[in-house]
Length: 320
Ligand code: BDR
Ligand code: CA
Image (cartoon, rainbow, N blue to C red; front, side):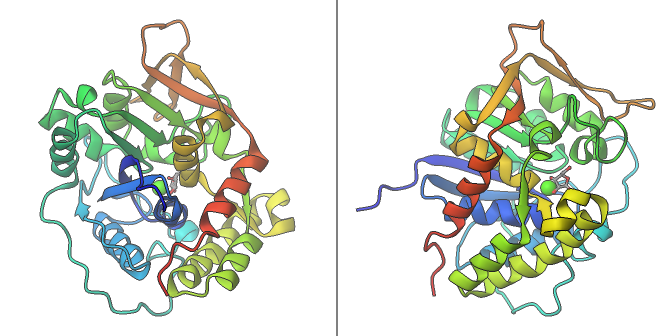
């Protein structure tokens, strides 16, 4: 008999190709109990993010509540979505979409986080892989949220690795630095999975081809189409990726950290975000702040992460 999934998760996302990979990792993993999905702007508009989250879950035959969240940054103007990386639709410009019936949950993403945290105090991990406005709003709605959640794991930020939108800033933090700073300072158990580790893990296109071959399904075909588009972007930019037609799986690493934290080296300390000037969106780790509950991932076992991703997605998780 298979044990029921034990790790309760709310996934906050802006799908997005690597967001889609991460979603399918979560759905495929036997220990993860995905309670709901929050959506926000970033790779696409929030409306498109919600459409994609509904589409990807329903395509995979899973009924997971999807909520719509915040559609713009708290204080700064919004940036145009990076259509050259994820496609205008966020999924590599899919040529057709199978009609799906899924409907959005009426609550906002922030309200959903608060309600679920009250229902399961101390049990829920929020895995956030997009700009952090939904978590920031949830903190406004329920200041006791840090005591109600088990932990927050976020993909975002960078310490030593150069940024991917400026010399020092990572995209999720840079898109809404005020929300990110609020979230980093909230005093909950938090792990930052940033470019210091996500830029060490390259996922080859061939892995997604093998997956679509092994599990023939509209969900794996859709993922393969999206990853082809996304890998083209990375292969044009990085010589080492051009050789293997690979890409970064950024958001996937937040889930791998959740289920295999031993694959990561972390450093504890207080994390804050620069909210103005040329270093806008930079994440700063104060290693001398020992009272902090937060930590940043600084090293990763690259091969073990790729293997964990492949092993999980190759499981028979899709209904035929
Ligand atoms: C992050 O930005 C987004 O484009 C990706 O989905 C990921 O969450 C990487 O910097
Ligand atoms: Ca993302």
